[in-house]
Length: 413
Image (cartoon, rainbow, N blue to C red; front, side, top):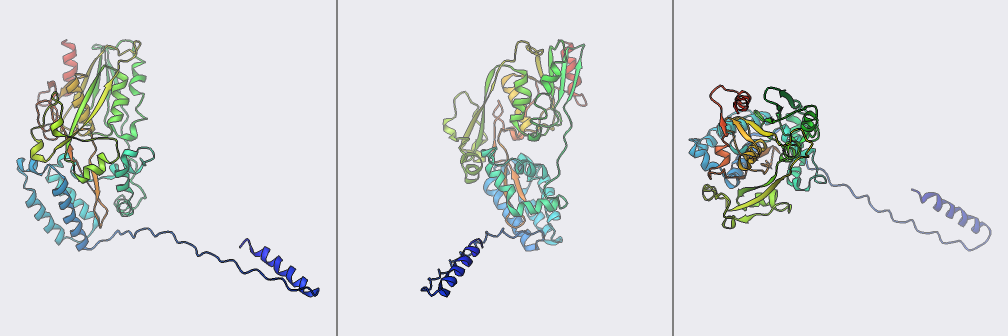
């Protein structure tokens, strides 16, 4: 202790005074030392589970879906007997050896038979890392997702499933492919992903490549095979560099439930209104009542015209789509369709692009993250976008490539 030398000096001085015949000085009492406060222990984490624990997580998973996943009636319309699947896979789980990796594989197989409809799945390593690397200080609205992936048990199980590494491995995405078709005076860009991690990497791709071209009358944005990512990346890296004017209002429909309140409303970034207050010029969703969606959220995207010296100023925009376009990429396709910002060429998309992220709910024992959409949007004809997707303006014939179709349309004027 730092006070020890001072006390020792005091004792020596008192002894010297006593030896000289003076009254002994009163020796100060030893100061009380506060007991150290122990830091709270981290909750115990597990990587091995009993059959009963896995069965409990399985039961919890289905309780969560029945209470919060609005699309079970849609699956029934698709001829999927989810109640029978629930019973079948419970029996498979009851008879297989209790192993968390096998448990996760079994759940993913079951969700595959449910078409993974509206993002229904266990969160993969990409989602886990995305939210783990995006703390609330940087994106406060993502706090619920960050809390889900940073729970000790969840971190432990995803470390186990990714071969014991502390975090999931980095996922490498191909560079944006660029090209120029001089006979059509068309610049070409193929974005294979809009993942958040690519936001900075791809931020100047369009502007940098256009600066190398002398004459551009058409810009082709290829998003075939693109299963989504972050819509702010789309705005920053595609829409803003190519300009245009106007505002797109997107309406997302949802139930005002505790899970939607936690993920979308309590952060203050979004506000839900009763469905009865939907503006008259908005498409009223015929599916809302059946799916229990009694509120809506409106968001806006505003476009601004590019600089006059932009080589693509005034160029016609084309977007290529196919059946793999999903989630954020689907949101971009809907934006193009609703606003006329670009002409769509290809085949009908997969859908579920309502502009809001799927929720993540950890299971109590394993910490595995159950992922699904709780919201949806309507197409211009009132159909459920998660089911119908977005139709192209110019559809391809079977076996016809969207790029080839687009170039043919350009050549034919």
